[in-house]
Amino acid sequence: MVSEKIQENIKLPIIDLSLEKSQIIKLIVKASEEFGFFKVINHGVDTNVIKKMEDESYKFFSKPFSQKQCAGPANPYGYGCKNIGLNGDNGEVEYLLLHANPNLSISQISKNISSDPLMFSCAVNGYVESVRELACTILELMAQGLRVQQTSVYSNLLMDLHSDSLLRINHYPPFNWTPHLLHHDCDTSPNSCNSTVSKIGFGEHTDPQILTILRSNDAPGLQISPQKGLWVPISPHPNTAFAVFVGDTLQALTNGRFKSVRHRAMVNSCKTRMSMVYFGAPSPHARICCPLELVTTTPHKPYHLYRPFTWAEYKKATYSMRLGDTRLDQFFRLQSENDEIISINNQTS
Image 1 (cartoon, rainbow, N blue to C red):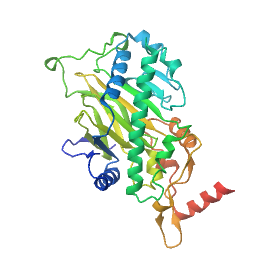
Image 2: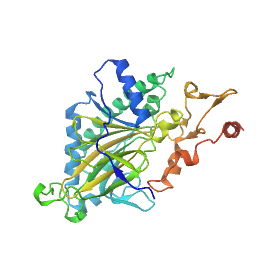
Image 3: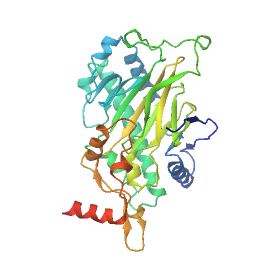
């Protein structure tokens, strides 16, 4: 078992999207290769759009547990508490899971979430539209930085009419909570809690989708693991920033150049943390294969690190495994050039 080390003195990248474009591109590529993570500021997402989504989220989580249960279970969308997925993973978290496809209405589920379903739906739709636009902007900058000829090759996957993107709102109360007694203002004072004691709120994992855009309040708890056994806490500041994570699918789409980073959320006994997480995903039938420009050249022929697969195939593999299991390299990585030839023949036969 690898011993765990927390290292707080690693400076994680914060990228100002108002800088000169060529500089932004270099910084994004470097951060994605080195950490698979960065924060963005001056991102253009309206503060009113963010506040409306935060307000609606806090309103929901402040309800009595019995009322929140009416919006569940999360199968696949709705309210969940402590159970993460279907394979036995648990955490100190409650959440709302919503689809983020603008072509599908959330009005029906909104009736079980809010006393004003229209206001909730408008908040969700406005937020999703804004963060999807931000995700697409970042993906196009990434494609330019990787010198991919069709710079919209990644963003088009998110804009597909059948995109399988999600919005997940996670609420992490202080860990001495009981769901049916929870109120969202239950923070204890600094003198009465121990901020050095923490529990797992959401266990370590990589995100299976393309790109994750995360917004949280001013409570700490998010950590990334740039290497095995090492965890780096992510400051909640600046509180205007969005955190960006490379997902497994983007790692495959960049032929392993960008790294899907393992991360987790911790909770302590002091302060409630809430995060609003957009998972940008392709349509179920989208074929995941990196552009030819990113294939490593060998003396004989191009060589892909990963076999082509559909998002539906990868999603099925993800949901059949535990949260922290390795999926991409274990089941989809080609071991040699010969494996690629076999894979291509299977695809065309």
